Length: 358
Ligand SMILES: [Zn+2]
Image 1 (cartoon, rainbow, N blue to C red):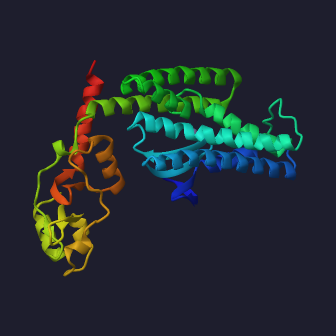
Image 2: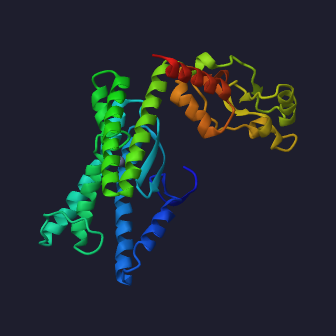
Image 3: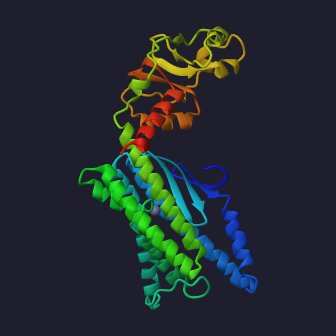
């Protein structure tokens, strides 16, 4: 997510504040004109505690995702909660279920810990206190975390509870049907939330209801697309192009070749013919004449395997690298090139089939 400020990095995961956070600060400032300075201070402290709790919840998702081999891009804190941006979620129902349950488990753990500490100080734990101002901090933090857990466990996609629910349904076999059932339930719950919100004039609940409704819709569309293109592999849209260039060749010679074939890129190989990186005309134009092309090559560009899925693997590789062409290779040997346009048009054809299908 763009337009955000990185405030910390934990285990390699950047934690960012979304720009709309500034709106929350303005909202709090405007809604508290009658408060004393110490009340404003404890209001601010409450917000810090709230977002520290949300961050720990999100970190728990991220750390479990990394343990299960997924890549975590970042954690973004929004005024209505946090979002962990995890690549490849949804590829496996059981992985998704485990990542989803990790957040609420952390909140339950924190809630239990703080209520336990409050109990030790002799505070009475019941009835729950969720007041923003006043009262024992231990009790309030404890109940806050339990409330976070309960809220996130609502079985409404794309919330944690909805993901857990879907992964349990998918155990019986059909992933797409599991998503449909989970998305329909999410729609019903979201409509209920918006109905209650309209009756009680609760603006935040309207936002959350809308978030759930739109999120469930995009989960359902993503699942349909995944189903439609499942089995479509990189190899089927690959251009079987085995022209490569040895790394010692001067970049300007390659520039001349690329100028002759606009829109092309060429894989660079070492003396043994193993893939090193890829260059297009931007890469070779960026280095002084006489530079070996190996030094101009993009070595970070993802290399696709012919059996990799078009969606989401290949699409994500293009989105993350920002390149228009990527090499396809198997055990270091170049097999061909895939063009971004070939991937997107194959996906939109499949998407079109989904929309016009029964
Ligand atoms: Zn969560």
